[in-house]
Amino acid sequence: MSLIHPTALIASGATIAPGVKIGPYCVVGEGVVLAPRVELVSHVVVDGMTTIGEGTRIFPFASIGLAPQDLKYRGEVSSLMIGRDCTIREHVTINTGTQGGGMVTEVGDRVLLAIGAHVAHDCVIGNNVLIMNHVLLGGHVTLGDFCILGGGSAVHQFVRVGKHAMVGGLSGVENDVIPFGTVTGNRARLEGLNIVGLRRRGFSREDIHAVRAAYRLLFDGDSDVLFADRITEAATVWPESASVQEVVEFLRAESLRGICRPVSGATLEPVPGVDD
View 1 (cartoon, rainbow, N blue to C red):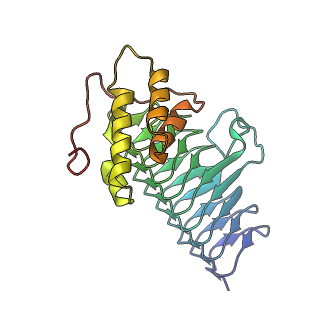
View 2: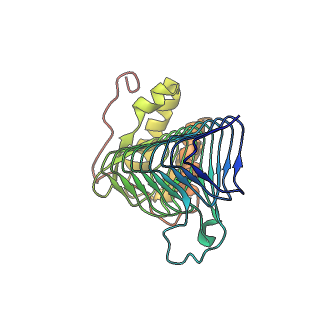
């Protein structure tokens, strides 16, 4: 049985599964589908062709599934898909897709969207992603599984952030971030690898060592060697490392942005337990 507060406004076409909780002054539109155990705490607006997965909680004053902020949008029927067990905090905004991006915005499972975050049209967010307070995602951004975006950071449209990467707070990211990378800065630059995150997620010492060695080859290698040739060498030297191959595939994939690179002359600092 669903628990719906008497002040909530639920359109007749909405699909409300058993066990849903809808608190005071929430508004749910006709095309909305709420899976079991979804909770709208209070004052939440969910509209458009929006599907919210099982166990997701949405906090007050979030605006979910409304029209994209794109001047080319002409009212086409587009959608938003949100996965299971997500936490969407106060004042978060997530827009539906557009014709230019496949007509769908996607948020994976177990994603945290902290206070004031914005997810623009046609973004694709993986699983177990942490998006902290007031992060801004432009249209068509792709975030890989387990990446972390620090508070106040902003990601330019069409940028890709790879799996397990970390973006420092207040960073402006205008180029793609490699899997496992860490970036910071007003115009973000690659600072190294997210070693702490890799250790926490159970990556072996050998795998971390391989990724660090590949990083050095790619970004600290001979400047006379073409970057494309360094990518090929990394793929050849570490064929058995799934993590290195993840980076290689990311670098070879089609993209509308460049790649975040280190500041000229920057090198990786030694990490105890990895480099000794």
